[in-house]
Image (cartoon, helix red, strand yellow):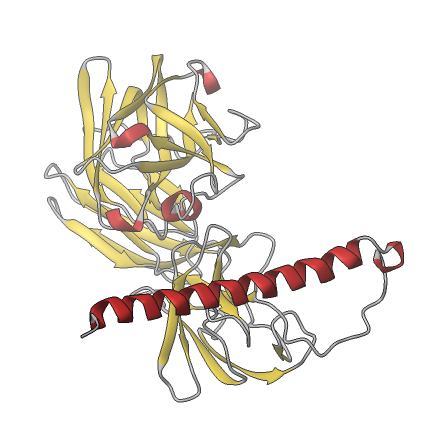
Length: 398
């Protein structure tokens, strides 16, 4: 009797060989046809006459931005957001795909009536849903959008929608947080456009955190030895420990903001000693989009295009022999994988530790840490689990 196993193997080999021959012949035919076009000068710039092709593949994108001015419109001051999840549903309501926004703020969904790699492959209704982070708001009020796709031979993907998805603007809740030392009470006032919106009495030893009104633009602290005033940013603020033992910056002091775009015109550089008159340790300057899928480096960038980060997640410092005022700084977690990382910020005057605050970091939005210390010589930045910390807009007094 013949060996059936050997026959089956031989038959399978013949089938594979035949398929390879057919594929090779088709490739050779296409190559010859392309070659004939390339050798014909008249075809170099000829207008297309055959629009019957089914097309290739392109990205259909949902764009998400941080709505800095919270007006629901994408403007010059708004910034693309990285790492935001967007989900795609077909006409039956079934989840077809999901994607996070890239460093430019786009969640891309490949579209084609021809390619199996595409996720949008058939004309019809498709729904795009931006996953709004907990507590955040879609100020543009369009986190859920639907588009109807129609077949169109000759188009890049073989089908089109009549209009693109609109930009989706997100804004986080704004809060002011901090602690009160046990040496006396404090009064916290929130103002907007010169008018006091609310006043709170903070008991000695209190830990506080509360939401800010949309129109709030200033927070003021009063109490024996506690006078401070902070101009609010679009981000939440943490004032650290409020104590009469921590001399504060005068409310009328001139503030100096140190950005990091002038560290280098390239994408990456270890920040050199002497930049802005300070000594720097274990901090690198980097373009916000230098590292792929680097959510916190993008979202933690509040001005210009460069940020600092703690190299390899190890502790870092900035210092000066001559005392300076440490007003505030923007701090973020570098990666969504480190969302909720705890940072320790220690401020020294000579050999004396005068402030030590723990704050929780996010890769979605920076935190405006504002201890407003009158005189320090060294500030140390570290994280509990040794994840990288992103630093931008350091504000000092001299």
